[in-house]
Length: 175
Image (tube, rainbow, N blue to C red; front, side, top):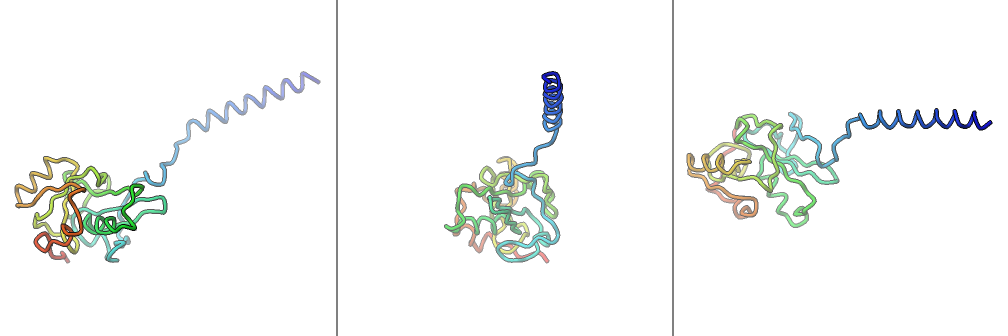
């Protein structure tokens, strides 16, 4: 009788080891807040309701435990985020790195953390409604655009509702 239990135990232990090895080979899906983002032709801006891809320039996305909110521009996203009820540390903010993307069609593979981005305001570039903020991962790329266009480089902590409402930094919609 002990032989039967012994063989059965070894068989069960062997199966468990095999299952464990198979499980180790499986890819772990990314956490909800770390999944790759993409902007699709059907996406509408969380603030203005306009189709996001109808505008040139960088886009924005706010990722929290309750989902993803997409915006037609970094300015729309930051205007939303600066509202007291949305200004939370657990919200991850993403913008396109325009140092690695074409202005007319930003590449979703080059989304960066907005908290570490450099923003150029007053560049005269066309984008969505309101002030246009060109976002960059590298300070040198942002400064180059600012120098060429007469814009100004800002960090996230420099941007407030006053900056977002500047008439001088606004561009017309490009339709």
